[in-house]
Length: 195
Image (cartoon, rainbow, N blue to C red; front, side, top):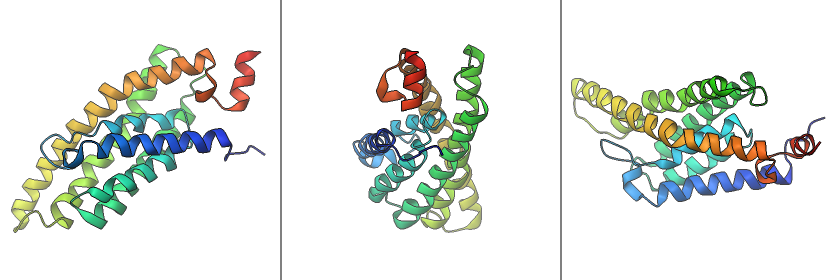
């Protein structure tokens, strides 16, 4: 039986969650409000393509980060749940488009498809938290405009962080794994790269 909870994976999950929190909270409210959410931590959403432990790590990191959100408990739980679902779907993309056999086009397919879930789910669901749950507007018509505005804003900002910052992160991790750097590999992978 394959062991999921190895010391290496637990440490890596802790590092991913801590990095997510540090990258989000260091920018304070800029991470949550404005036309362009300054949230470079979203680039880490590409990591489930490599590491299954990144799925719960991103969930925990997002939940801890959202404690400082002005949208309160709704953002802490709903926002984090969106990250969990997106990370799980990204991980599934990584399972179907395997890294070991990936040539350059396959790497870009992994990035494009894997990054699509955090972008679309955040753009579709987080405006609900901001507009409807956050009490952003007075009328239904204004709420619809505000939802559309936030949808486009999140679509753009998430795309920038996932693709512009996440793509170099993806290739950095892929290069480190190919070189056999143990921090980026599991025990079984390390043995096969040394053979």
